[in-house]
Image (cartoon, rainbow, N blue to C red):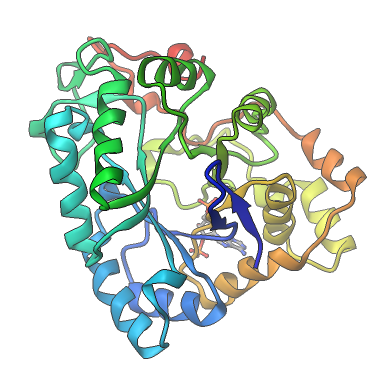
Length: 317
Ligand code: A2P
């Protein structure tokens, strides 16, 4: 099984199962995933399924004799709980829902803060959003660091952070995140951000590595091309006797990134895991890199509205 090294020398399985938009059949999804060999699960409080995951995960770990130590479980702090006084409670709620004593990795989900009373929801009005002057990223992150000291979390990191946010966080907190989880695939290669993360020894997890086909309607744009159907991807898959999804996953992993494809289909869960065996040569990797068009399927546009302190250029530098 491929692994990714973190800056403290620990390693994280490079192939994880994404759970965003997984709401049905979680028992059979987890059964299949664990049987296949997945030992990394990517969760988040805002996915609103951590309770179900907690129930079925433990049932399956027991049935399949899988120890907690052999699993890597990530979750994420939702935007409504950035105020340092809410961070611990949010983490404890996730631990309770997932029925865990500790998380392997806890990420700040977005460099975006919302009012606490919104709870596990996305702001729909500008007044529900707080600026990063109101709650600086470093204040939230230092509260997350206390969770490490307390043993509730082994590593902390961030998600959806561009270079400016990373630099600001590092300057203000004096800490380097273990991981930055970002959207990444051949339509959004993020070369300069990867370069910065490599330099700073921040491991990268690529979310939506297959092009986020399951994203909710409010994130859909009919003009967006389908990554899994892109002719260079499908041609390469045919030439390698692999599937387009495997080509996309191998492309990410071979460049040192972790991937967390989501699937609720047993065959595709196995297919994705097997991408760890696929090797692309330098020319094939390069061919896929050339598909970059800075296309974000998840662009954070849902945080931009009247009276919002957030706008897209600032979100993505
Ligand atoms: P399904 O759950 O029916 O398998 P991403 O991880 O980039 O967000 O993509 C998730 C989407 O890709 C889901 O719609 C998922 O559908 C689909 N998917 C997952 N694995 C594969 C695969 N191997 N081939 C084609 N589609 C896949």
